[in-house]
Length: 419
Image (cartoon, rainbow, N blue to C red; front, top):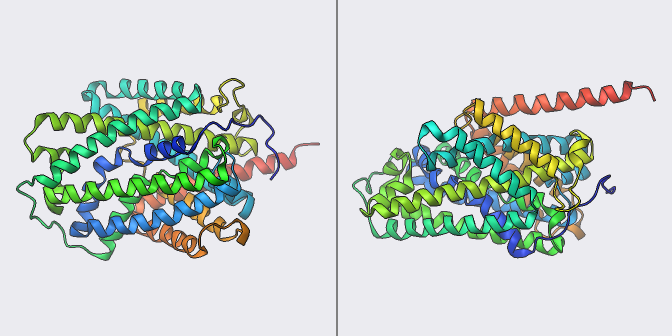
C-alpha cells in the first residue's frame, strides 16, 4: 500500500481506549429504544432476533478486525475494500459510511436533545451538542477516549438499574405475547437490533491511531462486541420480563416503562440521563469515525484533498471533523432526520458486505478467523438488506448511485484535463 501523501495520525490508543470507543459506539441510544420496534414485528421472537443479530455482528466484527490488523490505517472497509477489491468497491463502502453516518449523527444529536430539553429548545441544544463534541474530537483522540469512557460508565449505570428493576418487577402487560413471531418478523427485528450495536467498525476506522494494531484491534473489536452483546441480552431479558413482548412493542420508551413498573420516580431520571449519555457517546464516536474515513478518502482524492490534512499538534483530521460538524449542524437546523434515515441502514450493511467480501480474499497468513465467518457475515448482510422496508432500500440505492456518478464524473474530468 502506498504511503499517504500527508502526515500520519499518532498511535495513542491502547487496548482499553479502543474497547471503550467501541462500547461508546454500540451502547448508544439504540439500546434504549430498539427493543420496541423489534418487538412490534417479532413478538416473542425478540430473543431469537437478538441471537441472529449477534451472530451476524460477530461475523462482521471478525472480518473488520482481521482486515484492520493487515491494513492498520484510517478508513476501515474503505481502505481494505480498495486494496483487495479495487477503488470502486472501496469508494462504495466509504461513501455509504460517510453519508449514512452523517445523517445518523444529525439524528443522534436530536435524540440527545429530546432526552434533555422541551421540544422548543431541541434544535438549538442539538446544534450546541454537535459543536461541543466536534471541539472535543479536534483536541485529540485521547480526549475523545476519555469523554467516551465517562459517558459509557453513566450509560452502564443506568442500564444496570433497568436490568435489576426489570428482573425483579413486572407490569400488567407482562403476559402479553404481542404479535405472532414469523421468520420475516424475526429478520426485521434482527435488522433493528443489528443497527443498534453495529458500532465496532469505529475501532477499525481508527486503526492508524492504535498502538500495536495487529494485536490490539482484533482484541478490542471482539472484547467490545462481547460486552455489548451481554449488555443487550440482559436488557432484553429484563424488558420482556417486566413488560412482555406486547407491552414492549407498545412503549415509546421501553426502558423507562421497565423502571416505571417498580414505582420509583428516581429510576426514570436515571434512565433519562443514561439515554442522553449513551447517545452522546455514540455521536462522539461517529464524528471520530467519519472524520477518519473522510481523511482516508481524501488521501486518494475520493473526497477533496483539503480534508487530508492532519493537525500538527493534536494529530487529528481537524479539517474533516470541523466541516463534518458544520454539516451536521445544518442538517439539525433545517431537517428532521429521525424518521428519514433509512438509507443509513442500507449504507451500514453495504459497508460490512464489502468488509466480509474483502476478508474472503485475504491470504492464509493474514487470516485470523475461519473463512466461513466472512461467508456468513456477507450472507447475513444480504438477508438483512432484503428484510429492510422498501423505502430504505430505494433511498440507499439512490444515495449510493449518486456517489458513484459523482466519482465517475470527476475521473472523466481528470482524464480530459490537458497535461
